Image 1 (spheres, rainbow, N blue to C red):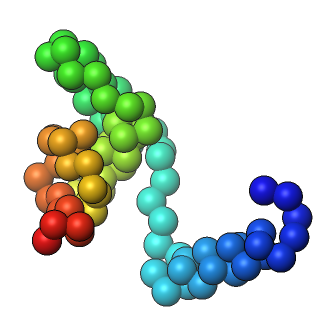
Image 2: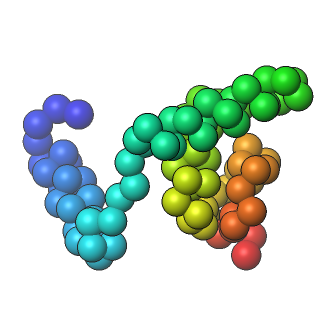
Length: 88
């Protein structure tokens, strides 16, 4: 995004959001990448290809035993703790 008022507003809003969650952001690290690779291989064997970014998110969530909120729950079938906030 080009420099300007909208960019500054979005950056400030994102910083505010990060502050409300106490800067708690999980990274795609070695453990998450290993989990994602296993998921990708398992899905490929079952003929169930899923978008790589969704597989990376699933790897992060599973490694950290976290809950995931997502609208497309079918792409995260391996995650036991998932909620669709648009339905719940």
